[in-house]
Length: 121
Image 1 (cartoon, rainbow, N blue to C red):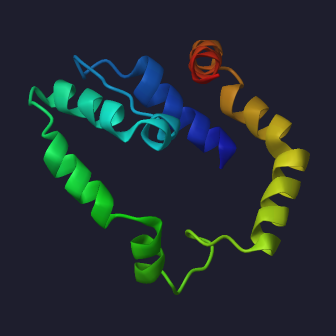
Image 2: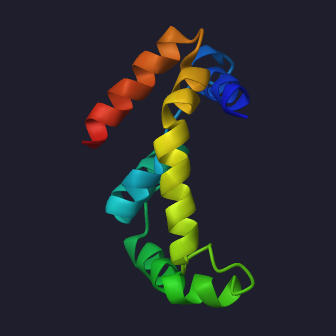
């Protein structure tokens, strides 16, 4: 799956040429500053962000509300400790392999991902 994901990223971020203008919004941007992230989206679409509408929508999408609607899956919001432990173990054992598979044969993608990572830090 990591090689396929690398193919997907490379296509949409590096080699795809039929889109004239791209705007990338990363999860970390939304988590850090939702208004700035949605401002990027609004700007891409050529519209003005209505901050009042965004604030109202954001208030309706609380973790408790999402948890209520997804209570059948405790890992969606209320991550159980066992899940977090498995996730950390997977990351510790496999992150290097996933990185290698995603970037293998895709040097431009690797440079792009590293640049994005540096911007987030």
